[in-house]
Amino acid sequence: MNLRFTALVLLVLVVLVGVVVYLNNKPAPESPSKFIFGTPPADIEKLTYQPANGPETVIQKQAERWRIDSPITAWMDDYKAQNLINSITQLAYLAQIQADASGSNSLAANGLAPPQAVLTFTDEKGQNFTLNIGQQDAQGRLYVTSDRTPGLMDVVDGSWLSPLTQSPDNLRDMTLANFQPDLVQSVTITAGGKMSLITQNENSAWTLTQPIKAPIDTSKIQDWLNTLQGLTAQSFAPDTVASEGFKHGLGQIDVTFSAQVPSVPQASLEIKLGSYTDLTEKNIYVESSQNPGAAVVDAGILTQLDVNALRDHAVLHMDANGATRIDVHWNVAGKPGAGVNWFLIRDKQGNWKAGDSEEHFGKGPLAATDSLVVQSLLSKLAGLQADQFVDNPDQSGSYGLSPPWMTIDIQIPGRTQDVKLDIGWPLKSGYTAFKTPDWPSLYLVKTANAGGLSPNDWKGVILKPPATIPATITPTMEPATAPATIPAGE
Image (tube, rainbow, N blue to C red; front, top):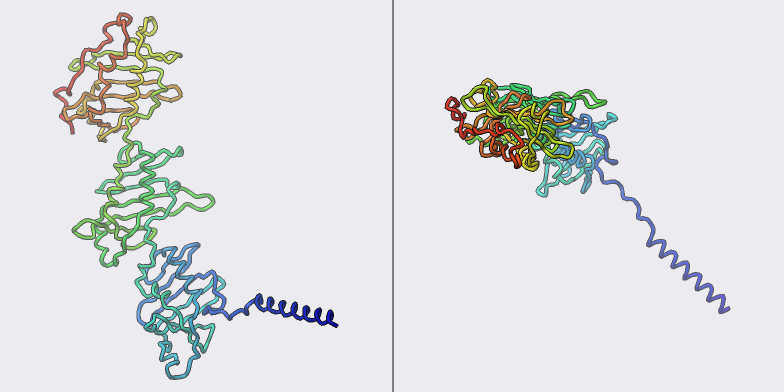
């Protein structure tokens, strides 16, 4: 008997423990959804907010972006748009109240008959949702009714509504230019009555083609495009206020794009730079074809988008270590047709030799040179940077280039053309003009930065004994300033 009793007690204890474990781990019953619309709607395509007193706000999805269609036309900020849509579709009630025909729990008593505003939206299947919005209490809670729960008033947190009750400008995308810089094909900049056209060729090289042909610095144009892409409005002014600001604008920028396979070519971007917003000249009005409206933008953008800053200031583009021959000619001041020639050639061992004529090259003997000095001179040429440009080639004579003080021809294997350079007589203004046949502009370099290229500098390449080269190769002239007929700079 005792064994049976003991076994029975143990069995009862096991059952009780099992019951306790089951009860502790039993899934809690699912509570009914507190979402206003039951299952939160997805893929909303259009939303309309109509207050009892005030303009209607309409936003609609286009592709992957949201756009404001009323009372203004503009792209929405993606982050704000998504937050607004999520807050509406996932709106949950804090409490539900059965609506009475009269009294404190009636629709009329809580601003819902008639409603103070009506919110409607449509999903991608064409299904419509309506939310009547009533009054807001001192705790910031709203009374609303949904077409999904007729006869019930829902009490909800009212913070989600504020974006719709404020100016629609607060929902705008403040970005004025949205594009891919690598798809830009051309840029036209109009300012001060002058038009500049910059184009990109199939080799991704950028060139200023109007009003004059000139190279564009690739890194600078990329920075310029990034600046344009980041053009952002501080705010938007009423069109009636800013309309006058575009009658006498400061310029315009037009950007065209290449095709993005498999899409069709992107529509061109047009940026209008209006006048200053006030006498302080801190801000200007800007209008964009991608985000219409009178945007207020920091006037500093005018300097950042200046076309002159895009010019390539390098006088030459060459590999200083790749040269195999250098021909140099110096003109003698006041003696047209008179001058001195040097010819330098590098042998297979990398050593430079010098002669004073083609005939001398053939007959020799050539003078040994200091190859390090030659390379130093080549490096100085390769590193020349213009401080200013003169875009009228007819002024070559005024800048000491007719005839030039020095003419240099450099042969580099692999190039289709020699590197050629004319160097003007040093001007009293402190500049020296340089000219290449590749571009029509004159490059003005501060003479102090163009040092190391005078005849005396070249003379230093010859190693002793000098008897191995004719004495006539040593130039004796070295004008310190331009001839009297040359103006003293710009």
